Image (cartoon, rainbow, N blue to C red; front, side):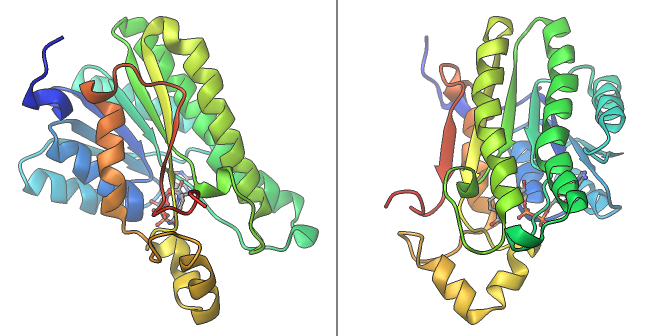
Length: 257
Ligand SMILES: NC(=O)c1ccc[n+]([C@@H]2O[C@H](COP(=O)([O-])OP(=O)(O)OC[C@H]3O[C@@H](n4cnc5c(N)ncnc54)[C@H](O)[C@@H]3O)[C@@H](O)[C@H]2O)c1
């Protein structure tokens, strides 16, 4: 196996990213495009079109496909349109997610279903839709899940359902990695620490909570979305051909203690 500077090159690859309108998902779309991939930016708001415009403005290839991942039929349609547009599918990034801050004793059944429906059930059926295509193509593929430090650690901030969903993502990653290894589909998870996005806006605006959570990172700061991109490119590229079923924490040392 020859080692070249092309190790991280994604030229000619076709990717689909869920929840590409803002935050981590947007950075991932821009990152994959920067390394050469064509990107299907999917999501539930027209804001995703701005991500597409940014990519095409820089000379990259991208399209917006409306897709609510909590509706498996939407995911199947999005995968089909990606293949129609780019001729194939190589990379799926399951980024779409929602968070809650409800004390566990007050969580409703609707809230449980909403968070699990997007973060875990939605991720599973999107992965299934992508894998069906990848298996048919016969050339393997990459599935990269955005998990969380909350998939492995607990917290007192009222995020029990989110913890359950992200913990599920981590073990699902291992299960799918084992099942789909025979097709050459590598499945991995990235577990971000706290990242400055709209999802964590209310925490950033609460001095006490912000300090409490910031100081749990060894680096004593929140990250920014762009700091997740390197791990995504690693998992999407030839740099990780022998890596599957792993959870990589990009967390400023939150889980290092
Ligand atoms: N921000 C953090 O500190 C942090 C930490 C760990 C993990 N994460 C995870 O990273 C991912 C991105 O989070 P973010 O911080 O960028 O959040 P964000 O709220 O800024 O963005 C979430 C994205 O998901 C989309 N989305 C929500 N529901 C959807 C649905 N049903 N179908 C399709 N798209 C949907 C939103 O429209 C948006 O584009 C999530 O999975 C989140 O759980 C975030």
